[in-house]
Image (cartoon, rainbow, N blue to C red; front, side):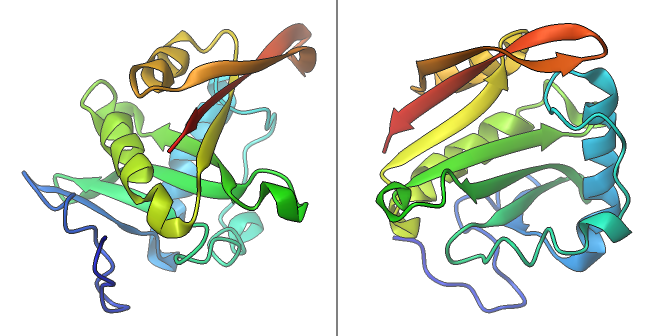
Length: 181
């Protein structure tokens, strides 16, 4: 079990290696978090958001992620935020309390350097201490890189929502990837 870190230093003790730090996101991280997200918005590969977001419109993002239940983590590499991961409630009904939806985003400058892998490893490792017994990722069927990554970490295809999204006139499927922890 991970020791609780003081409020000003909630880094994961297992992830502070080789210049990599995984920690709770703070308000000062919001501009880079939004920048990373907006690049994803433009690619139409990893989010159903169609318009860029602003820092102001996302001020409550961190408030909606209490670190002891639904963390919002950033991964720092080379002294900068290279990516982020969130835990979200899968569904609001009580019976789903043990399931969390994960979202992972990586800066263009740090892709293919293990950022998403490290964040997912930490999420899986910490899930039981957050009282999660299942994790899910909602991934567009055309997002091969994310599907392969989740599969590598033991996620299986738990479902398919065909033709549920329309991105610039192209109809897309959504794959539900899941795993028990």
